[in-house]
Length: 379
Image 1 (cartoon, rainbow, N blue to C red):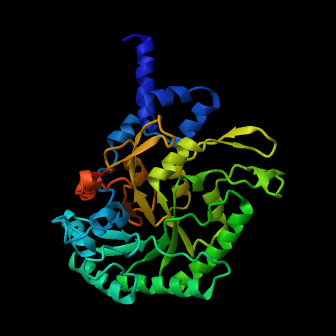
Image 2 (image 1 turned 90 degrees about the vertical axis):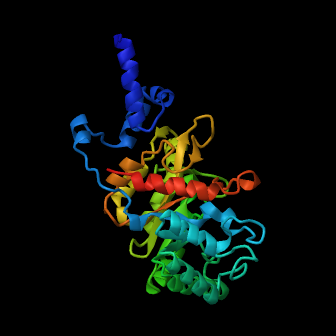
Image 3 (image 1 turned 30 degrees about the horizontal axis):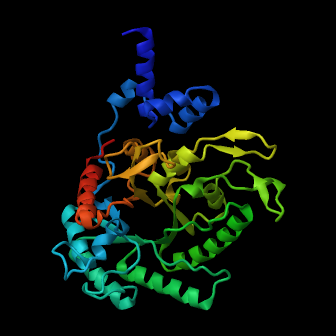
């Protein structure tokens, strides 16, 4: 092998360790981009360290979970029209058979012909769901449920929020949450208001025995507009370099507000949001490090969405969603290095798992494949 060929081979190996394909790695190996990419990846193990690394189970059996959004087609199916698992009861039975021990709800609606009817967002519906969970050895860990839109809180919103807390108590949940960002705004002032609101909601949830969490996609890790010249509406146009959700963490009480990182979308943010305009107008490079954010305050992240992605730089996100264990996200490193071993609850999710009429069994098939790959993780 020539010296040039050896150099290219070394680049390919290092790129794979960084989670980059060769083209992305070679593109990054000039100037500041190379330094940023290496820094984002964190410290690398030597060959000797890798050889002596532990071989323990990274996700214990009792922590293997799934968010029911992944199999939403199955809970929404008409049980009178198909032999496939349909409605909450049958789907929970199937997930228990596969081996899952935890579930995260994404609301409490199912097909009207399923046992219990269409809407189980009631005290009676929660009691029925709890029976099915217990029958199948499953634990409800959280829910992407109702977060009041009003602020200050309207009485109607407060009453519904308290109903969700009561339902969570019946189901035995340790956490209650939402699938939305605290605000969709890029501006610091709006995140300040969101933090005030979430601190209040977190106090209510904590008093009821739950950890309140927000679940986020890539845009929450984009840069906050908090400085520089103001626009015509008096809003800042530039950034100090802090990301939206990282700012939110600094403004909320760590004993009242928690986060659920979607690890796939955090890696999309790493791919998409690499530069910002500083207060002086210069363009600054800063590559997002999902693992580093968790390591810095790992107990602020009691739940994760364990969603895998295959690198595809032809798309705007840089990744395609795939079943867990079939993509390029380095979950072995993430779960072995995030700290607080045994504390976190990773929920398998795949937004595009439903196969539609062409493959109506696909989401549950992916759930079984992903469970097997989660169970195989060692580190």
